[in-house]
Amino acid sequence: MQRTGRRNRPFYRISVVDQRARRDGRFIEQIGWYDPIAPDATKQVHLDEDRAKYWIGVGAQPSETVRDFFARRSLGDLKAWEAQRKVDRDRVEQRKAAAAAAPEKA
Image 1 (cartoon, rainbow, N blue to C red):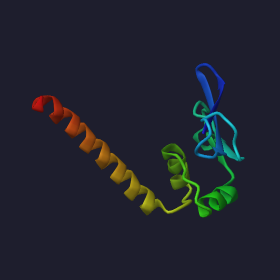
Image 2 (cartoon, one colour; image 1 turned 60 degrees about the vertical axis):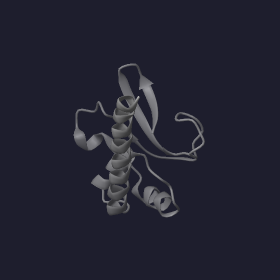
Image 3 (cartoon, rainbow, N blue to C red; image 1 turned 120 degrees about the vertical axis):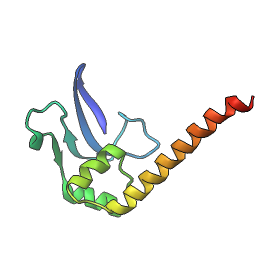
């Protein structure tokens, strides 16, 4: 997601980006947008579902926020995403526990 808009009025473009590019840098294709301030919840997210399915099919990895948008529209393999999310969260918990135990050893 690329942030645009002015201060205190965010607007995001949902883009396909090479993972080595900056967040707001060069993109391959824009497939939608997200307006978190929109009063109507149905108009907060606009997504080209056909292009999203294509990019997921060729191996694109969506961010966590974009995964949630896809999940609401039943795009992609949700069980695999949830399994990966659980693995990531467990890894963070293990690091926290190791960091908490490290000062006790010293």
